[in-house]
Length: 434
Image 1 (tube, rainbow, N blue to C red):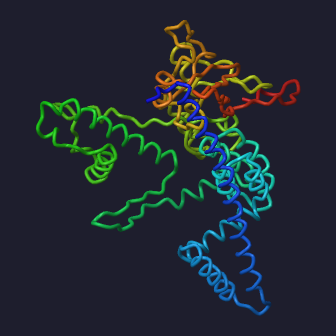
Image 2 (cartoon, one colour):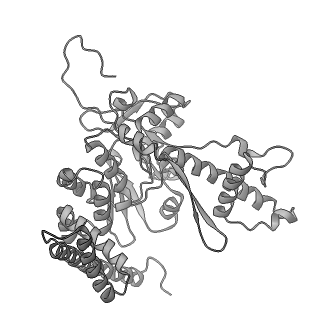
């Protein structure tokens, strides 16, 4: 068999990549055509039921009838078709520029979905303005990477403050029990994002501690050796135990002490604009790698943490240039967490706090431990850099240039800074802005 890196192997991979690109182009054309057809069906149903004396029920019946007709041809339920007709109309009629960019190959289907779903949080009269900015942000990025930025953009463009809308949403927090099959049920808690993330992170750390200790002791304990639970199963068991008993009683790490679980603390990484931190702005803050959180919670976290620093940015380039930290190793790591925000392999969005700081030019080969030679990589992509033919070099401004085994290059720009200072006109005697 041809070894990876051989000419025949690379030629085969190049052919497959070319085929995939061709298939993606054709699929995009078909998917857009299908959306336009479904939207047309929706408009037809609306026009048919638009008689001056028609009742609301007539409008719905016409749409149901059309959906049932299409469902027979598509071999799916009329409810599904009716939902897809509604989604198609919103996409085609509400966000036409995004659809055109998709057709032109500038963005992909995932981008359009992200633009539509985040744009719907805005009043309809603002969709076109949001759409134009969002398309530019999507180009060159993967959908999952850019989605968080689009959410922040939509929140900042909204005529009502994020804090006000979060307060209303938080009032709807609840816990729901949905019966399932085979004696199982789903327990769903709707909570503020930062609370939900903290809960999930703590459960994950507890589950990993139990699994790791179980694996270490399995040879010496018959009881532990019979425990074949996955991390997901352990996480669910710990959650149930915590809620029912208040503290974990089924703790496989317990010896003569309580084990490490009592010392575990949830970790979240929050980026807070200076204006929001001081209370001058009530815009959303970024829970890195996830989604926006409300400013009040962000300010509370900033005030309670034991370690946080201001980050200073060049007002022209918006590039971070220094940090308050005096301890170079830990300060440099936090500086890079704020700069990178997530794994720097194209398309990966694993949060920086869960990644490894990698020397772009290997330290063993003379690479220096300095900001211009460091970037966060998750374990998966750190291993790819070490053990496959993928190569990377760091350009100025924290830009990473990845080269695939086929010689294709992918630029991974540094994320948009979460904090940027814009020079403002001041007058003698005016107080400092922060």
